[in-house]
Amino acid sequence: MTVTESAPEGHARAGARALHEGILRRQSARESAARTYARTLPIVPVRARGLTIEGADGRRYLDCLSGAGALALGHNHPVVLAAVRKVLDSGAPLHALDLATPVKDAFVTELFATLPPGLADRARVQFCGPAGTDAVEAAFKLVRAATGRSAIMAFTGAYHGMTAGALAASGHAPDVRVVRLPYPQDYRCPFGVGGPRGAELASRWTESVLDDPKSGVPLPAGMILEPVQGEGGVLPAPDDWMRRMRQITAERSVPLIADEVQTGVGRTGAFWAVEHSGVTPDVMVLSKAIGGSLPLAVVVYRDDLDVWEPGAHAGTFRGNQLAMAAGTATLAHVRENRLAERAATLGARMLARLGRLAEEHPCVGEVRGRGLMLGLELVDPEGERSGGEAIATATATATATGVGVGVGQGVALTRTRSAEPRPAAPELAAAVQRECLRRGLIVELGGRHASVVRLLPPLTITDEQAAAVLDRLADAVEAVASTAADLLGRGSTRPGPTRRQRGSTRPAEGTG
Ligand code: PMP
Image (cartoon, rainbow, N blue to C red; front, side):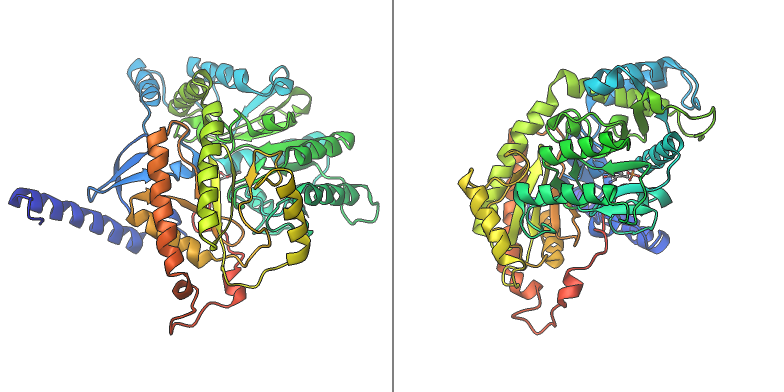
């Protein structure tokens, strides 16, 4: 009880605390060891609106995880609530298999109005199971049926979901039926050069794997890519590389599948992230934000790929009317209020401020992002640099063309310091996440080594809220930077992790 608190207030607070702790205790006793966010975010949400979540213990948090990127409009947006209430009050069936309903008709009309022009005129939509991973499975099955081939090409660091096929195409679960290609990235460029040259080499590798008759790689049924890798560590693909992938696949009749599960609905500063490069994919897999916070996923593809027999891809939960209504309201609100443009401008400003944070703290190796998909990579500031010289050259080039701007056509990626990568520091990233939570800020972790702190705020975030988010984050980074040596096992009696442990290939805890 505080000095200003009355006795009943003190009791209420103690009761709320007991409720909070009891629920968390029962969760850890009863739920699977595989639980994810629940481990790193020990909160018990009971109310939420926009950017804010209120816990059972009465604490309030600014939520920059946004349901793993599912909440384009934040929690419980009025247009979403109104759309859901309208369906509930209308007496419409909540479950409708894949039958035609006015709610579904309105959703498809709104969805098609947003599609990239090359696809909009000739699009077909398939309602699959409700998760992103279901849409990925459906897309693979579709392109295999359409081409009669079976291999899938995917990229290092990819994340496409947790069911067998989608997992096989993800970077942390290798599978022989999936051919792995290098995803371009600047800071940890696999070719040690970064920048446009690194992306060019990645494209050439892809081309040679496809054209070399002895590459050991069959012509694939499809190529799947994320225009910005999210779980992979917030890596925006350069627009030129995207166009090259489109050209390479088109010339060889390989369907290009854009996984826009996380990047879609304005998140990256365009309604669909493929619009930045002007690429028209053959197939798009969509989920998360399209359901307006409720489960919904679809595959959208060009009509000539529609070779499926009736019933070729079925499922019980493909007609979630509430999700379709919430999704229609969300898509329309993002479109009508130009929230993609808002994400672009606010995201650029936030990235600039994060850049200053990186300049102040050597443990922030790089900040990067596109629109409101932002990340800070935490590194061991005293760890041995890798590939120093080659990358230093690339930095010099990037700096000459505009300070701090690397790949991604000058909009995607800010490089704020020397570009030679230090070893990833997942323990610092986890500490930043904990310190953020203590300050009432929820952030996500991602990246190859779980060393990237990620921000996915709702597109409705105000300037004041964005400033509050960045203040809390800066404060958390400051706190972690001042104890970095201890956290890394130096300057304390605690033995430090080995280099390999620090560079663990385990996916980030919250992956999903
Ligand atoms: N693709 C991408 C790009 C994703 O980010 C995710 C989820 N993080 C998925 C697919 C899988 O979606 P879900 O968790 O709904 O299965």
